[in-house]
Amino acid sequence: MTMAVCIKCGEEKFGAWTPCSKCDFMPETDEEMAKSVILTDHHMPPESLKQVSALIKTGGEFEYPPDFLADWMAQDFESVQNQTARGCGGDLSCMLILAIPAVIGIVSLVWLVIALIEYFTV
Ligand SMILES: [Zn+2]
Image (cartoon, rainbow, N blue to C red; front, side):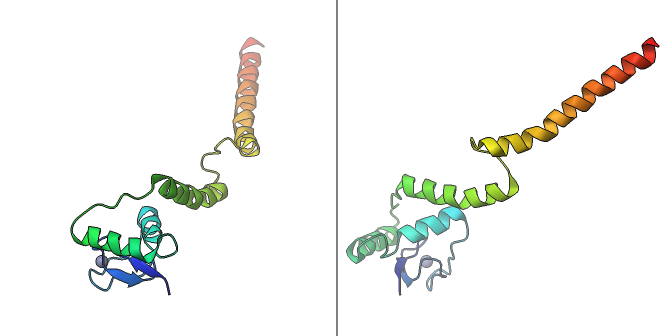
């Protein structure tokens, strides 16, 4: 069992990605899921979790480590990006694949221009 804290109301719950028994909040976005993972006994000692729980319950804002959130979201989007080839991120083979249609486009454009010139000059 994973001890966790609801990132919305601060209630203690079991499991990071479970609905909160008090406010019914369920983490859905990458950011909410990453924050929920931080507020578990995998990443924090139980005493700290209790402090965070008390902090959120009294309306305080817990400072999530920005590096952890960024890493988490980068990981998640990387797998999606690799499959859809959206944004190569410095990957040379990926850029070459994207460059091929561009080169074919330019070559056929040049060929078309040459054909037109010949058509009008003959
Ligand atoms: Zn809650």
